[in-house]
Amino acid sequence: MNSSPDPENPKNFKPPNWYQSVNCAIEGILWAVKTQRHMKIHMIAALALLVLGLVLRVSALEFIFLTLAAILVLFAELFNTAIEVVVDMVSPDYHPLARTIKDVAAGAVLMASIGAVLLGYLALSGYFIPHLDKSLAILRPPPGLVAVVAILVVVILVVLLKSLTGRGTPLCGGMPSGHSAVAFSIATCVSLSGVGPVYILLSLLLAIMVSHSRLLMNIHTLFEVLAGATLGVVTTLLIFLVFR
Image (cartoon, rainbow, N blue to C red; front, side, top):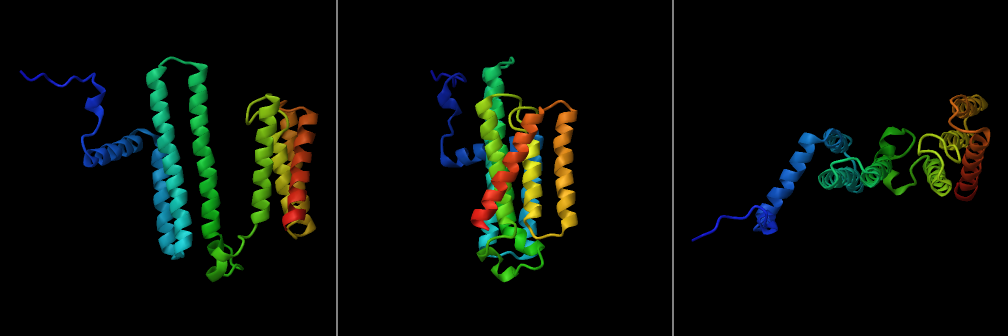
């Protein structure tokens, strides 16, 4: 007498062949697209990015960058969705560790998105900045590379310092002020880019306004704001002096 398959047996959930494995993978992707709003947004963005590459007739290397950017974000979002499902299954009630797991997985998506933006910038900057020769764009350093790297370095330093001090949240409070650091880093990049004094003054005023708003809202102390501004200016100046 043949016994019916036991649904509790883990072997029943393993695809019997490679075709079924691929089918399960596709079903997983479709489920994520149907149920996750961010996955829909990433899929549409990836589609638009690839179509843009065809419209601009990018080179093979530039198209590789665009494809990698799209795959990187989609992979991270699928990974994040899978982790969230597992956490919800294991810990249906609120638990601080469950929240931490979800935050870390979401951080992976954010990091992938930042990487995708950089890849897209490397691939497409020559097509939107007129003075850059398109035929050699992919072989030259992209315009503003030092400024982009300087701002990213400032952001990374802010994250490291906040993790060491353990004060505040990523976007609210803590030592130093991340908003002030990034605002003054951008203002320093503008000041060193060779633009006129009016643009320099406006960028500095904007950085001061951003920093002042953190004080008015009682998010940071004066010391934290000054520390952030100093970090942004000094780090950006050093990177420009060494690499420009």
